[in-house]
Image (tube, helix red, strand yellow):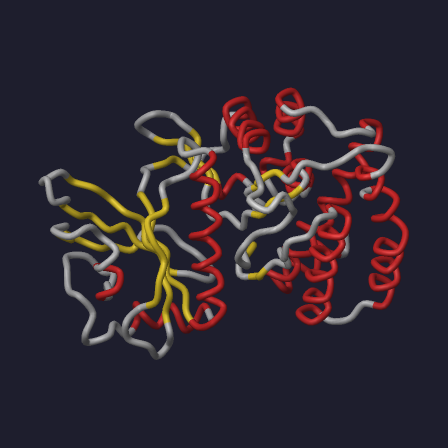
Length: 326
């Protein structure tokens, strides 16, 4: 999939719309802009293992300048990624418009071979420095607290991806059931991608049969319940940025779905992230305290981190094998 999409830059299509810059545009991308918008340039921007990305400079109908971020991916997996990201970012923007760049559209390039899909959003010029903990965590807690699942259930109305990997996000009323399905899906993908490992399989079966029903299930017993909160679902430092102009923190590259809010920061336990620094988790908990039973919070956090480690293994293959061995 990554080779197919990068061919767009190596071998631009003869019917590509020609503007200043080194990134070929397509008629359907141009149609995403409001009538009367003049596209000035399209240039490669940023790097990605599975997509190609660009910054598009335009002049709006009223004569004012504007910039957009364009991401493209190829083949059917590219369609799932672009549709998922547009819907994930739209859901986040609906709840917290000051926390994510505004999504504009997603769609398919007019000409195939390979079939190519795109996601278009507002461009915000951001630094890639590690985010300031209090601003990030206060906004994140606000997102979790204020978001409302449209079905009252856990999941998402479309498949979303973490990296290049589609997630199992079909709606479920029970958080325990949803989390079991979510983890089982990536565990199966891990074996398919990185090879079968009997000892790991045995351990995972114990997790599904005993640990999840006890540890996660207790959240929904004895009168307790879990609120479905909208989470970003891939929130490491590389998916955050700080606006040069306003110093506001933004999040992007989302694989969002409705989940237990504590699921979000399970990713911060993974030691390959700089956001692994405990100040982030401690700051978040000041803004949104642990669920009951509070004394089992750390065990739940460890369990949620397993999901992120396993899907990392799927996304990064050889490097990921080392992660799953931890």
